[in-house]
Length: 297
Image 1: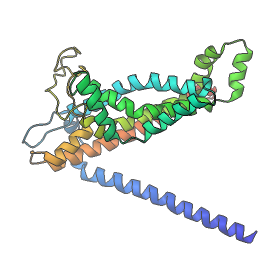
Image 2: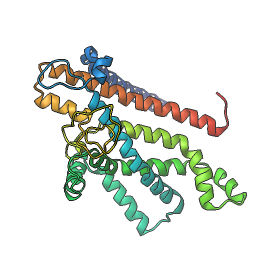
Image 3: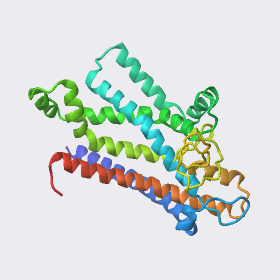
Image 4: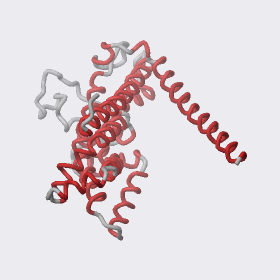
């Protein structure tokens, strides 16, 4: 008995040390990025355009491109991933077909993003003839995130209590009515949390976008919101340099005298946005959970 208690305390101490080490590592990493980029954490840097071979450029177009590509990729990925999650959790039965589907999801999830980028270059850039476009990048990122969103959807739906489903069926609802009127709304808090956290991953993605969205962007006219004009920010078939790609380019081949400061500032902005995605996801998840559970704050 004494040995068991000692082993339990020792394991607890080891786990606390590991958890503290992870938190310290994260704080050190984020603190270093924010400290290095502190001089560029201002509105002018966030909304202004970059300048070539001069000091004082900003990251406005790159930041907009990153947010826009997140929006496009989620429009593509969410319906497919949610449908796959519903199928796996509600309709699939143990067997070879289900095993093959799960194997494909696992294999797709394990592919490096650079491989997805090369696949996107071949299929979405070359075979379609679209060239380097926002839409090609969004499709490549959608391929990257599809297994993640499928897993999130399946887990969220499976975690809905059976009593909720049985109560709906007992009231005379069909299986499909139970899914979209009861199960999905009940699973919505977990779904929203997972989807927004996945958006943060898309926001910071660079490798897959180097070969699909491109490393340059036309001079955008933010007064032109016609999605068919080449200089319109909403045109999905234009080249688009995202924030993560811009950081890599400025660091590797930037010609501006303050290239290092620009890269540091852009890195700080990127990590801040990733934190915002995570905080918003938890807030919305808590609000939706409270609403659908019928609790009051």
